[in-house]
Image 1 (cartoon, rainbow, N blue to C red):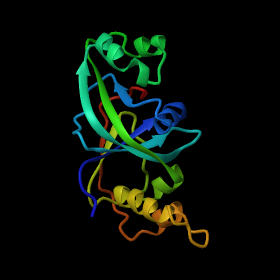
Image 2 (tube, rainbow, N blue to C red; image 1 turned 60 degrees about the horizontal axis):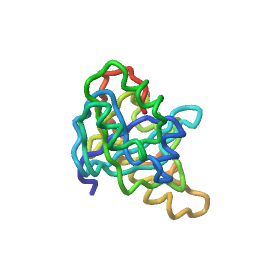
Image 3 (cartoon, rainbow, N blue to C red; image 1 turned 180 degrees about the horizontal axis):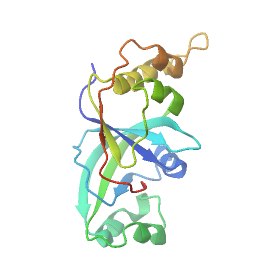
Image 4 (spheres, rainbow, N blue to C red; image 1 turned 90 degrees about the horizontal axis):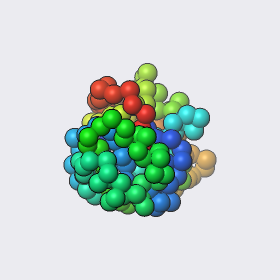
Length: 181
């Protein structure tokens, strides 16, 4: 059974790679995300990659002035000083999710496959909650169970396509058109 909160975020490839390599241990946002410690963060890498590449777990949530965020998280932000302050220009408080237990999947889940789970799926610009019992979360979870034990060429992508529980249980948060960091 799938427990706890699950969200899907979209990142540029370099940020995802830094998370999986342990160089980036915080996800920074210009606006607060109402997520709890322990939430599973599924990481979608934007096109041209266009796949869910892995996941991590939220270990802490921070809402602080950008200068305080920089002082606290610069070394694990994956950003240069200029990138960081350009991103937070014009706001008085920024938001950071501390991440732990990041893992990159042996088999990613393509955008094409994701669009078959709830038909017409579009990756979130801010973030998307994944409903427990929903088709997207079930497909992501099942693909990783089988994806780690490849048998006769069957991988997580094929499992996601053949799952019987492909209904839409995801809720989107359409509040922002911001690009993710």
